[in-house]
Length: 190
Image (cartoon, rainbow, N blue to C red; front, side):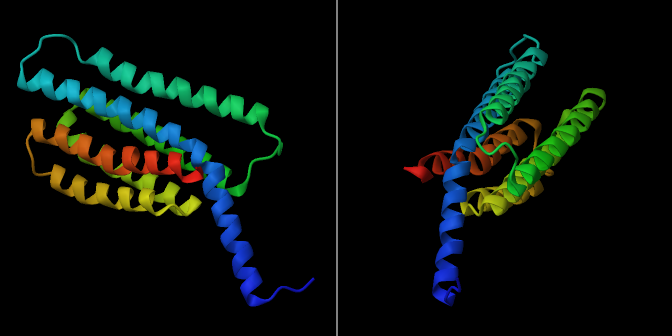
């Protein structure tokens, strides 16, 4: 069967729309990570500005551990319940992107533990942006792409601000790259 140019475009458009709907269930991943890190950053901000005395280490362990366990569980259950039996190319790329990002995050966190946390925040913001930008490009969802791009600008500003302000920039970055696009992606299949 031979398709006209218009029919070919319509098939491509339909596949892109299906892909957005298929990946709208990943919105939860952006939302849980966004809210967890924003909450930890806000607690850290108040810890510094109000001179609270508890150990922030446990706040950040929870902020990273809870979404990591949830993400791993979600990935395992989705793979088991998959009707396809095989991962799509986009799923393979997303797994590689976020798996590689987890490795980079781990190394950066170890640097922060041994040196100065203020130095690593711009890097973290940029990596959050890179992940959102590439994820958005893969599923052709522009709010994620623009959220990712916004993080590069925020990371550039973060190089020049105080420790308190950098935490507010981290909150702004995750709002732009994870929360807003996450809620838009969640609502994209309705």
